[in-house]
Length: 616
Image (cartoon, rainbow, N blue to C red):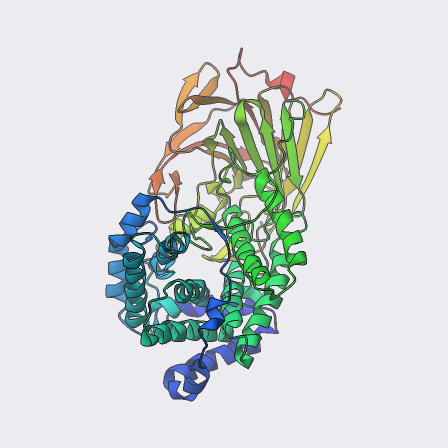
């Protein structure tokens, strides 16, 4: 064990609740014993005799969507879902890690990204083919499609013996394969007895190790939801055995617990990631539909919480399609790309605009969605860092904003890039300087301990006021820099004084002299040009205008030393982008940034005094 690994475990131990410590010790002992004497567990890992009626009578959840013919064709030609690196990344990973017991595998920061290796091993490309067969069982190509899935699935099981190789490092990945095995048993009606037993055994083994290594205590999160789904499917299949009933009961209990914890009272995400929120909702609907279709559980309480989650998500849809990428995202899917569980929810009713802007705030999760005329959509982040105690997927982005117009992105969260690889890349994309807010002394609003662990989290306050002049004021503040030897507090005030205009005022109070840097990160497609006293930002046919009071922005794009000005549109993909930066130094009370954002052609220069006056 090298120093980085030891440091990681010490940090996790420090952050973990005391009740977790004995469980961690037991798990390490169990893994050591499993590796040294696997024969001790041979009986418990052996699946019981299974009647085919068990899976024939169980209904698979209904799915929405379908693969395009071109996608299906590429899958049949051997293409798998590889995220950013493509199949070359998979080859590098296989070369780096031949078959080894899963606990022996160590990640090299300069080596392949294990997340990219895991993606095709979720076997969700086979789910797409299986869904196609189930939808068209009498199609002329049904036989060849069944043969393709059978051969691919059996080859994967052979090439990845139980507990050996990278695909058993995370039990979340094991759990996500269980529904694929289940669907294969249902759809592939031409399997031989030996082939059926091979798939059934793999399903049982995956459920067994998932149950043994559940993500609990400080590891609770979307991983736990994945594991619940796997246990529910496997438990239903083996529910006539004590082990199967245990899996089913644990899966349901944890699903209800985590659905209520990870989807907050206002429907927002406890993990402070909009993409993972959608992932969790998909997973929960997937499990709920399965449980209800097979009369295994009353899901009324789950559905009520999920309804809140859907209301939250609908408030952040851009042009009714996708949400802004705020917080971590690894581009994962609950079922498969292009497929999602059915929800059967009523379509949200369109909300009329309040004045020129409409505001929808979610105090528990800490987000406000702002919609304006001409397709303007903004977000304001006034939420916590993430899910305690580790804050795994949160970014230090308090008071950050994003802005779209006509569906075109202008001010953006820069994304995630990768979870592994160079530490400075992970630190940058999580850090405060990579978001549309103010950084003090080039520090983050909280302290990064590892790529997934934060320390010294912050608190955010928020309020909304409607003024007599028919405008709205949003006021937010955070204490992330109160930890400095000379503490500093940051407040952001957003005023919407008239149609098409938003004023962003950043002010500070505290002690000592500091360096303050305001950043606006632009989408790579945005062009920046001077326009009188304004900066004109253009993306396709859409345009907005920015101006800064008594200060000019410097324009920075894609530097390596220091690493700054980058955007990640998808996991593993890196693009240069433009950042508008303004810096000021001095005592906190003497520093202020006032930005005017005009979402339509301005008639004149920015009237800072006329539109950014104080509330008397």
